[in-house]
Image 1 (cartoon, chains in turn brown, green):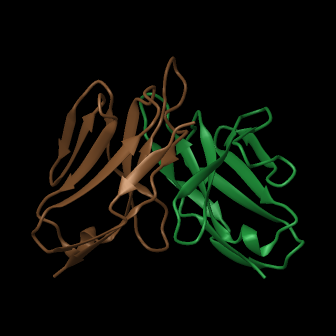
Image 2: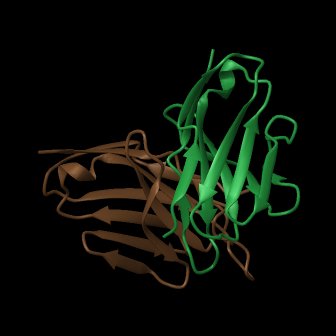
Length: 116
Length: 114
């Protein structure tokens, strides 16, 4: 089955700096790659996703890049703020022919701390 | 996106007992899933809750331990049976995830077995 590796496990940055989290996946059939942010005591919240027919997607301060050949994808957060502090999870899924993208394999998570 | 509500939000249970967790979505969704998140760990898929039929379980999870119901397109339950301290985790319900929608999560049920 699919295996997703995520690095680093912890990341500490100063407010205003950029943060980058990287993930690799094993199953070349995976075609959907979401990123979730989980705050303490809450469920994961989708912050951005990318599908295999695009290489990059951006939403304000957040961007995701995908390299299908190398089977890795990355989350980039620019101009970090203290409220960005949380655990971030990458995930991968195979959706085809009307089946669901919701059956997700998650990475191990990255604890991001943004210092004021 | 739709909103998922889980009940209870947390519970402390005695070993050997069972707990049923409810998941309610505020709109119809094609797919619903149950995940487990052990303390400080990532999320692991337990099963896909299929409407009107038996759930589809992932490797390492069995129906006798985690029976699941899904009577309609907005509601599902997960039961954690014959609990032991190793079952102490956060259990999360997820919905959506069709080709045009992302998968969204409830706030989770924090279970402690003593």
